[in-house]
Image 1 (cartoon, helix red, strand yellow):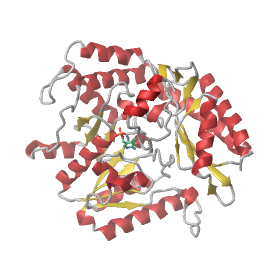
Image 2 (image 1 turned 30 degrees about the vertical axis):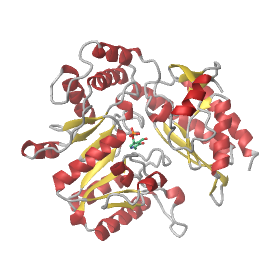
Image 3 (image 1 turned 30 degrees about the horizontal axis):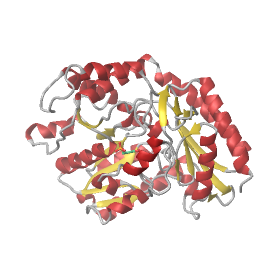
Length: 436
Ligand SMILES: Cc1ncc(COP(=O)(O)O)c(C=O)c1O
């Protein structure tokens, strides 16, 4: 064990893990879509770290913007106006596009904090107190965001804050056995009916907000079928509930558009974001609200505040990142690389029996590993972890959730880099096919 690793395991508490036996890889360099360990091994960053390093590592424009800000006003309390704070807010509200004219943004430090503040906006605006969100969702690990989260990462925060309820969002691959869908409209209608049933049972007059990950991220890249999100919007309008799109992972071109909701024919009342806003160079998140919510706070006090809201270095990084997304034509790259990724995943699925299904949109994808395609019996955690280890040993770094393996590289990835990384995946799956 190297000294850095030794000190790390002695003093750092590492996320989501029993600490005993951890051997965190020591990273010494990161550049473009690659990072390197202390032994000189090179890794394709095929998850963009935690789906946040959208512009890869070592982007000079972002680094320079942070340095310049550190040399002028590194920090000033949120009540003051400064150039980067004003410019970042304008850029973010414009980034949200049609529907957000006259809207405003409240900046936070990360995704969970964004959802925490979105919860408070919903309560303040509607005067109601209940919230609905999906099972198979992740909205952050702070206490309120944990209550929204629809999977095991919530359990440690239970019994939690009252008023949080969950519903099943679209996941046709694992729909109840008795349910057979004729077509996509059938899927949409089935899941919208399930949602409306939950709204009615929980009392629409008490429900302040419905939170959805526009495209469910860590819980499996669940892409809403056509009409589903407009249907959620219609239910929100019918029952006077605010619709919140959590774009913490899906935002900033990950799915191909600035925000993912822009390709699903829907405009939410509120958008929460983080990750790709600064691509991880410094922390920053936020909550964008439509004009009608911003106007509510003209006369009513806004009971939200953070010492580091709209931190100048975060704002400087955001302005630079938005500039880089444009300059590098990230939208075009995600379109082209995304099409290549899908085409290649089609081939891999045909070749490898362990892929039950893959789901992909833009450069946001997962393969779902099964022991048996007929029964869809999932890989057990040990086998999925082994697959991840084999990938890492060949320089393909990513993360897993349950029986799914994430493929979400930095949005700057080139055609050759993508092809080479997927060759590694192909090779590893050939070996894994023999393990079941
Ligand atoms: C959809 C979504 N929302 C919220 C969060 C929480 O963000 P953070 O870890 O920055 O608090 C995450 C983190 O992965 C996420 O994927």
